[in-house]
Length: 212
Image 1 (cartoon, rainbow, N blue to C red):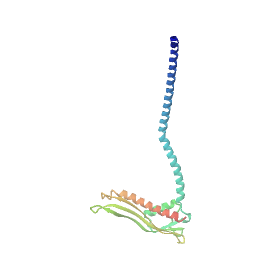
Image 2: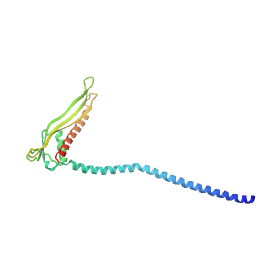
Image 3: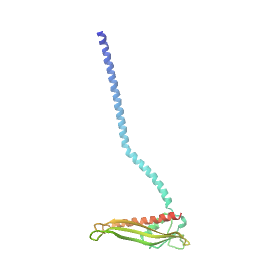
Image 4: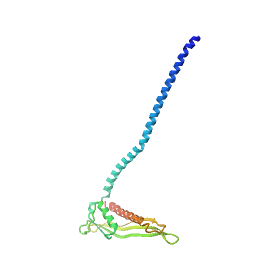
């Protein structure tokens, strides 16, 4: 009986050894799979910003093209308005130059000839001013408002009213707590240009939707 037990003991040991070897191999395979997964995840994380940027660029390109096409179409004014004659503001007024360029982009040329004009844009009530909004304890102005304003009316070739008088205006504020007008000259110029562009865009919107 003792001999039999001793004979079977090695077999049990060998069986346990094989089990241990199998477990070790399985653990190694699991480790390799885990490492491969971690490497794959690291690669994906590394590429994620690039993929995201490419996606944004693609979306921006598509949206940009669509907006450009729709924008060009929506900016066009009826061909019957061209050529158009402008009156009511001086030729050296920056508003006139801005408006003339914007009308040209909308497909309407501006002519100095009343006889050749198919429409008339009559401007009046032109304002280009700055007013004080606030002063400090010493009575010095520290806050201003830049105002661009004009009223316009659109007539056809026979001087019939297409769009009745319509006022538009744009205001921008800026502060000057140090009382340094020279230091604020650049800001004033930018604000005035911005207000002028906004005024022109208001005119264009009214022309666009009022002459459909």
